[in-house]
Image 1 (spheres, each protein chain N blue to C red):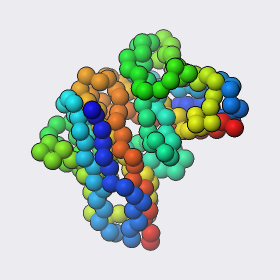
Image 2 (cartoon, one colour; image 1 turned 120 degrees about the vertical axis):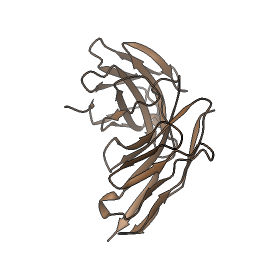
Image 3 (cartoon, rainbow over the protein chains, first blue to last red; image 1 turned 135 degrees about the horizontal axis):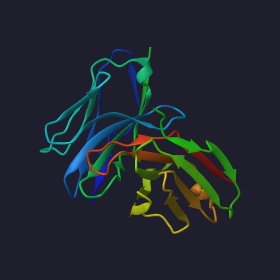
Image 4 (cartoon, each protein chain N blue to C red; image 1 turned 90 degrees about the horizontal axis):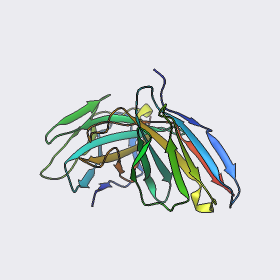
Length: 113
Length: 114
C-alpha cells in the first residue's frame, strides 16, 4: 500500500544546530512528496514539495530531495531558529488517488535558545 | 486572498449526539478533503469532494459523512458520537486534483465528546 515512515520525536536542538528529519515512503504508483509544518493550535502549512525523482524542494532554509533509489525525502536545515519549533509532517500523494495525502506520524521539534 | 475557513473552532458534544462541521475553501478551489487528527492515530483521511461529488473515502464508519455544495463549501457530519471521535478535524482545499497539487489546510475544528 501507500505509507510514510517518519523519524520519531521529539527532537530538541539548540539554536543554530543542524536539523535532519528522516522520511521514507512506499507507494503503489507514481509519488509526489511534501513536508508540512504545524504550529501549536494551527492547521498544516506547506513547507516544500518535490514531484519527481531528484527534485529538491526548498523554503525558508529547509530543503528535501526526492530520492527514488532510497524512497526517501529527508528534511534538512543548516541552522535552526527558535521560531522553527513546531511539528513536521512528511506526506505522500500518489498518482490517480486524487487529493488524498498519506501522512507520517509527525516529528515534534523544539529549538532552545 | 482568504484562506480555508473552518467553523466552529471548538465544539463540545455528548455521546450519542450528532455534529456538523463546516469548511469554506479558498476561492476557486473545487476540491475539499477532510482529515481526522488524533494523538494516537495521527492524520487520517476521511473523504474528498470535488465538484460536489465524493471522489475518495477513507476507512471510517458510515457515521462519518460529508457533502459539498455548488459554491464548493463543504460540511461533514458525524452521527451517534462516540468518545473516540474526539479529535481535531482538518479541512484541506486544493485547486486541482493532480498528484503534484498541494493542499491548503484550515485551522481545524476541535471536537470534544464527553
